[in-house]
Image (tube, rainbow, N blue to C red):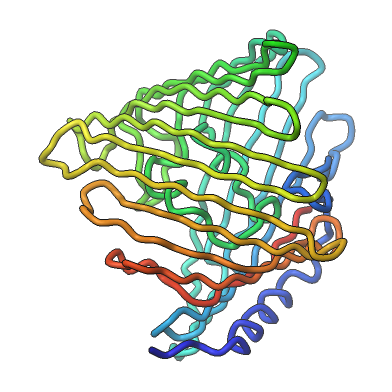
Length: 348
């Protein structure tokens, strides 16, 4: 079987970097996928503007090498003088892509409204949100911005088990429990997603609960529950149960998620399930080794796959991260792409 050469990925990454070099950097903490304050304050209006841009290249098995300026996300937040605040994210996808086997570049640009919501902070224990926001299931989906993650690809269970955005209302907050801070979120959606992305999976109706609790010694555990119906399969009332964890020690990190989704109707196929475990190890002050194992059986497939990923993440200056990974799938009846994948992401 043919393996595309590594130099094809390097060429693609160079194309991506060329499109990024003029973007001012924000700040990402070394050794952690978490953001420091960043963005541009707009006078005394209460508005802060920022965003991130991603260039990506891949050389999958049995496919031509390809490179793209994958996305440009613009973020705008507002903090009033009282309890009100607001947040929005608009993403331009597929700004420019080039396939080595194609004669022309692809410029099918699509604008996607990722988030738009208003918030009211009654207290730390109770805050209210109304609008379109990221579905609070697991860890990856709510912190999936490319500069804040360790790999270019996202785990399959975080992208194929539930719609990643929800339009509706949410109550959330932080409660003191056992001397530690318990984070909770309770949300519901009547459907009718705000500015849905073409071809995306959408909630017809949904409600869910998420809790996250620090156990100490750098370990956090979380649990998610979601009951929903999708536009594409009306009448099939699905239920998702999820568990997740994050352990951090100095600059080492171990994380994982597990999810099981039951089908409401047998004629829509078998239940789906999946998991991943990811480890991050510091190699130098700015270079990290990343390994991840995934197991995934989508609903109705009747068979699963195993995906092993190994790679590097180079946080060479605040707000910038370069990533390269090799993906190897076994029992791959689902035809998940495997091979080389890399990206450069910049937070500003």
